[in-house]
Length: 291
Image (cartoon, rainbow, N blue to C red; front, side, top):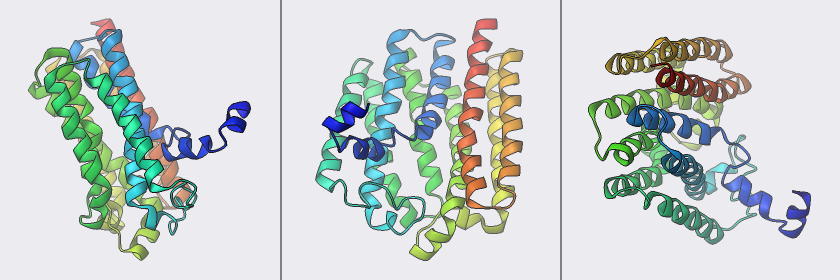
């Protein structure tokens, strides 16, 4: 790696721009997408679709981070958490960022073209939602809901690629994932709340105010209830519900982390959602193996 950086000294900046050094967003996009894929295939989906949706998640999340930083480049330098980002520090210019994003999206397009027309159409819808998300914090106190929709588009795409259709259970999973996204991204927004208020930006953390912890808890409970209902639709085994139980325990831990609303605790709670998503996905895998 050192030799590679010596040869390409700007490589760390592009890695940082795509957040490849901070893969939490990849996990939070990947676990629900793969959960949807396993639901759609009723088990192992095959190497082709597994490859498409795994690498597609990496590429699209990275491209989404770039468009977010382009839109927010004049704000990021004034926010404690984001002031070191490459665009905020002028280590990468907008044209370079756009070219890099275009390359990532082209690679994602190549992947999705190996599926079917419905999935390709959904991919364009997903890209549009991801593109408008960074602007939403200027116009609504719930940009987290738009992020939730963007992070849930992999679910109907997984069903369309696997079965050629999008059944009701797919939309049930989408609903649950949107709710979960609002919960964990509110924890994330709590980290930046003071800075966002000063800059005139909006978020669910600002909207909920002193009710933030209660609202996060209610959203987490609703997420679990939606997944319990989804489990009943497929007559899930004990393994599925064990995964949900582990996720519930992790949510309780997150409530402890955010109890004082300090930045480090809120960030730790947000990052902990990786394990909650993994617990649910693992439960789904074992469920189909045990069925």
